[in-house]
Amino acid sequence: MTVETLLEIKRMTSVLDELDEFYASHKEREVELLANALTDMVLVLDAAGTIKYANPSSFRVLGYDPAELQGRNVATLIGETLDISASVNKTIDTNVHNKAGESQRIFIFIGELKDASLHLFITIIKKAQNK
Image (cartoon, helix red, strand yellow):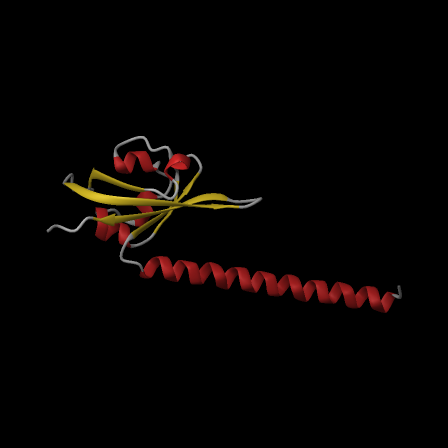
């Protein structure tokens, strides 16, 4: 291989890396915009149940500012221990206390995101409608 070919490969690799970075940052922003637009509460949990992200609807659903929830364990929020892995793809119907201390019925759905470098749980909490 010539020096020119090696330099061209290096340049192309650099361009591909920049494109990957651009795509990843835009994809992350699109996911954030989507989560922020939802009326249901969305939490991203790690495998231990620690809240890594809460969307703005956490205020509407349970009265918590998203920043108040980050770093807390989801069990402190719902008032019970939750086996997250066993709850994947199931709907949990439970009563919780919102920030004001009022009891309310919610539905919780947990999905799992897992690959070689990532293991997170996407939790959707929906306030039950009064009939």
